[in-house]
Length: 396
Ligand code: AMP
Image (cartoon, rainbow, N blue to C red; front, top):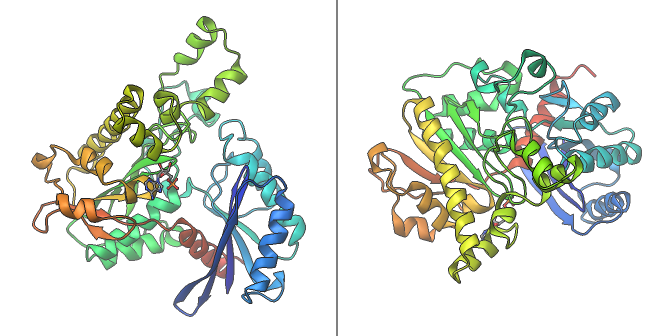
């Protein structure tokens, strides 16, 4: 069964083609285009590459195209992306302006180009369907809550991968099996004792922390929209709601300008004034740029704030995991996050931490109470697996 996973950005198309046979899963092909101005041409070129590579003869060889969809009004889980679901995504274009519009446009183009191939989305919110109610709340009037003003949580595909893979690495196949079957049985797969408590730190262009108890998320630092939680590359992160009327009144900004700045000019880019890429910010800080240093300190401070919250929520910790572009590659950020936490059992092996880049590794001393791990994430694989399960379990 061949499943194409398409990752759509406003000026990019990236893809991975997976093949599932029996229990085996194989990555057949990956590729992508940047600086795309015409997505329908990019889709043609993607299909042409898949044919030239010999992995498909015609588009009909694709069992489905899967998408890591972000957010839709009233829809979550792993679902067929028919027009009502696409419209439900479109309804939230304004709260996910960097994410939803390219997906809405791209999914419609795929639907037109591949009319016989099912298009299936795994929503980034799906992993949080079983959050405790208290972890979904903001202090808003009930009418706002009923209108959808609540914490959803995102990065579900990445944190699900980490939940499963960390359980395997920690010798807990029971927890890994629960995570694997989560969307089929709603977390009903039984797990044994003792509890497995993990905090997953996805630090990249977008960043979030998730607390995992026996593989199930009990919280995610992202809330209503992808602009919440930790500061992101150019998106704001958590902000006191009254900041919006304040800058509208005192700086004379329009609502459109505020939205634009919160979603494109804020986060690490806004604080540093340097770049939305942490590599540039680290380089500037090393040369004495004070705003770059402030952005780094702020980023680490915010990560540790959520880390503290989730340590308490979990009541202890077996493992702390770093993943995504920054988490996998930047030893100095991992060291800053873990500094001075020996009282909580968290310590690094400095040589192991420094040597670890983009590979699975234990970076804490072997006898430390908390295992600190680097695990490269694989969001596309999670999407492909769920799309496969969806196809196997959907009636038609
Ligand atoms: P992601 O969203 O997971 O692709 O992560 C993107 C961010 O991770 C970039 O903004 C970089 O700051 C950082 N990053 C990605 N790759 C590397 C690398 N090889 N070395 C250092 N930082 C990296």
